[in-house]
Image 1 (cartoon, helix red, strand yellow):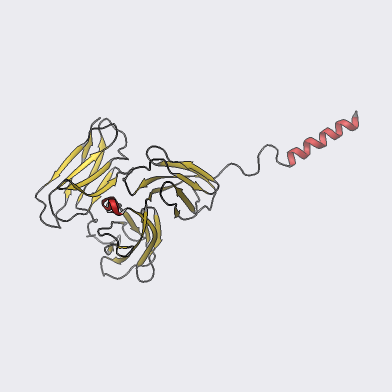
Image 2: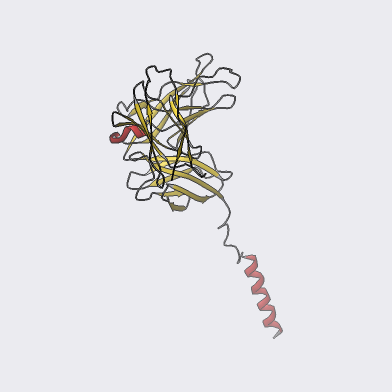
Length: 289
């Protein structure tokens, strides 16, 4: 009996030593979140897309949102849907991270541009560029190239509504957007002016129709689809994010800005008297259930 007891004790010690209660690193990690949007509709993909980060995958919800546990150091996410698969890269994950909006679509284009210092028009290197979920960095000439950016030639007004960001330490972040369709598959962004933080007179953002969208009774207006129409034809469109803001650059003309969010009444704002490109029109709207 004594030898049997010793044998049982030995087995229990071996089980503990082999990690019988843990599974060898199956837990932990950081939460990586974001929103997947369609370049064809401006909204969440339908049917839902599948986001894969590392060995884990998750379907987007009705708003295109996702959240996945990822291991430290992860740098890539893929999005599979009825469209071709899109791959997005990002800095190594070291904490809970929001990737922002990841755009997918039936087509893809290359986006190129140049960033200059607004005070002397010299190129700025090392600028972080984010557009449609794609990321890049400017070279010594201040230029950047983003490959495989989602696009839909049948709904390019949605593409024109995507807001990118150029940022670098010591400078004020600068939003930007595309304003022309691709030429041989390449979209050239207008020159981006990056203002030093010491500049007392930074240039305005590339938006002359802008404002905020809030909800009567509170809540977040993320997911509101804002479309700019001219003569009944859509010219620009974006989906409001967590900042609850919208911004468009459009040439002078009369427009209607249409706001739509499920569960709330649609709202229109008329833009008239817009005759000069240096005019700006701010319209903050409150959506009513």
